Length: 228
Image (tube, rainbow, N blue to C red; front, side, top):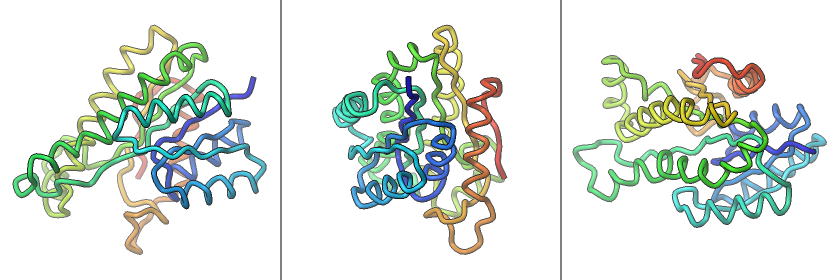
């Protein structure tokens, strides 16, 4: 039976590289995001490389849309073997200036959405002895220098969400291990070329991050790996 990776939060950087990397290993690829034009371009690029792919539009901060997307993935590509969570939010850059709605939005996509996606993929992941792979960023590390940078870059909300994701990854690793599901995280410590964070000075290749994800999946050992 063909294996399927569902990539939540598809874009031109890390997630596109992950799609190509797993596609080379004979995975079918489901791309999930809000931007239909970006999704269509992603599918075209993957299929041009001989990878079976399909797009599913969804707002990943809304559980009902996540559920519909996973039902559609199963109908078109079959059960989920790997869930890659690449979605994040950048609201509440200044936590003291943000209103309550913006502060809550910090968690709607990267935390609430992540947990909803895991719940709706869980039965498939358990049956496949599959994997949850999470993209995370260095702002989530507990370090005073990084905290200072998060404030300076107006990324306080992102930093809080990344820290929460890191805790979730650790707990889900323990929660899901008895069910045969591997959980792993790549901490991206820098800007990735071609991503929305690339202001012309990025040094990381998206393919390097994708290789780290595939290695974690294949070895099913480490919980978290830093890429810089």
